[in-house]
Structures are given as C-alpha cells and as structure tokens.
Image (cartoon, rainbow, N blue to C red):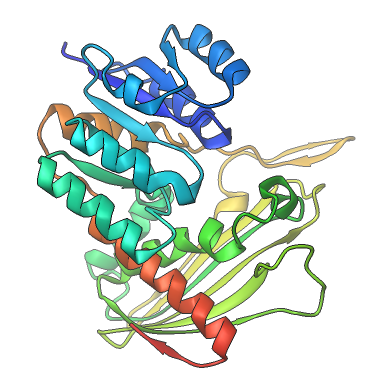
Length: 322
C-alpha cells in the first residue's frame, strides 16, 4: 500500500495533535518535522522517528517528502505554505488559512500555480455529528432552512495560553462561520457583530461576541462565541448547534454526546470524536487517490472574510456587507 510521506511544520499544541493523528493513519508516514524550538523538535522527532529540521526550506528538501501539515502560528501560515507549494508539496494548513485576505490569496495562488492540493483544517466538516447535520439539511428532512444558531464556548484560561495573539473570533468563531456556510449551502452576504465589554480584557482582543449572519438564500444565522467557561467546567467546552426549518428542527449538543462519567471527584464528559484523525485521513486519501479536497483554499478565504467582517462590525458598530 502506497503511503504519503508527510512533514509537520510547527510543533505547538495543534502540531502535536496532528502528529498523534497522523500516526494512527495507515497510509500516512511522518518522515520529517520542523520547529524553531530545538528541545521540542528533538523529542517529538524521536517519538515519531522523523527527521528534525529547524529550517523549513531544508525540511522541504527532505528526500521523498510528498506533503506538509502547516501548524505554525496563524500569522506565519503564508510563508510556510508558499514555500511548500513552490517545492511541489501538497498542503494541509490549519485554520484560519491566514490572518489577512492578502496572505490567504497568496497561499491559494501559490498552490494553484504549483498544481498542488490545498486543504484548510476545518475540523467540524469531519465531525460525525456535523456531517450528520449536513446530511439532514441536504436531504430535506427539515424542509426549507429558516435559521441556524451556533454556540462555541471555551475555558477562561485560553486567552492567557495564547498570550493574546488572537481574539476569540479568529480562534473559535471561524470554525462555526465555516460550518454554518457549509450546512446552509449558501454564501454569506452580511455580518453584524457585538462583543461584550463588561469585563476588562488583559489583551486588546474580543473575548465574547454574538454575530448575526445573513445568507444569500435568506437564512439567518447567529453565532455565540466566547471563552469564559471556568477552567473547572466538566467538559471544558460548550458546543451547540440549533437549526429551524419549515418542516422540523434539529438540536446538537456536543458536550453531552456520548459517554458521561460521574464520580465523587465530579462529572466528566469525554469526547468520543476521532479528533483530527478523520480530517488528516481525508487529506491523505485525497492526495493519494487524487480526489478534490472537501475544505478548499476558497472555503478558507470566505470564512476569513466573515471573521474579518465581524471584527470590523465590532469596531464600527455597523453591519458589514461581504
């Protein structure tokens, strides 16, 4: 069985998760990795039997390398992706595709020019729960869709972990903006967003916000995005999705899907999701079997435009047309 030789660029929290996921995929072979932290690089490379590089250009010249996972900080995606494309490597880039439209377009152009596949890591598209929602909407079970509400709340220590390098909309909101567009099956035409200011922020970022999104087919969406859950929250997250249609409704609660464990120490809601495994497996299969990517650079660009519109709306207090 032919396998895909993959290099992982960036070995922070999400890069480590990709390594764990790729190691579980039969047709994937982690052969190289790059990071500026030599200690983390050495230990991770040894763990997975991969060649370590502190220089991305050198890693891209690794013999037999076919593809890369780009898991660097968001603002560094452009350089890594462009270099990878120029080296003829297929690319799976973490969300957001970039932090500016200019960088996103440069990534897309470089991949198109080089003829390499480009996939954006929108993990909700590979969640069994969200895939089922998409199917229910597509097959008409709910009739004509009327509205969609998404909630994505995380724990209060996240901003400090990120050191304020991005706000909650770019970190979490972009997941639901993409998922809502994907499920609704229509392009967004406007965004209006308000962020809470009742609690002083240590960093100049938005921490809790509500966005109203109008889609071209008339569906209206609302996204509640934040990270004020206490660190002791039993699930560590609160992810929900509610849909209303002309013939029915749907409610998804990821916090309470699957196993619930109650002990004298408290309650736990362990995730039964495959995490990044299904996402990364899809990337591997699409490259090896020459199939179209299910989350393209264009999808990444549109989701980015939506988030940037929400942030502009917070700043101006006005509705922003897309």
